Length: 145
Image: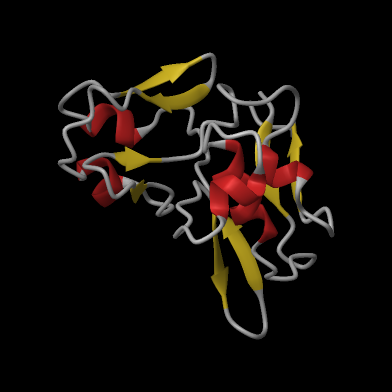
């Protein structure tokens, strides 16, 4: 399965992946209309300090504990990607507590959000990958079994 991987030694900490993610998930056709004067809520987050920065996003685990802990059934494994049904999410935030990677966040509207590999809003690669100027974020299949 293809996944998003981060080469932290190449990450500039520019946050462009966050902006591209927020825009891709906004449902709007213009980045200016989607993001201007708005607090962005991306599904990928830049962490780190002056020495090293890296992007944190869902790892789409083979046996995801977030899916197992979801009491409403909002999180499911779909074609190797962990996806969320926002209509089912009750905002209990249990998935956020159990995720070992800190990949889920509160969407500000009573539910959680997470990377879904841009399945619903793009053709090809996720928006964070396409928007990374240094190619620190890649979408590829690696030797995992």
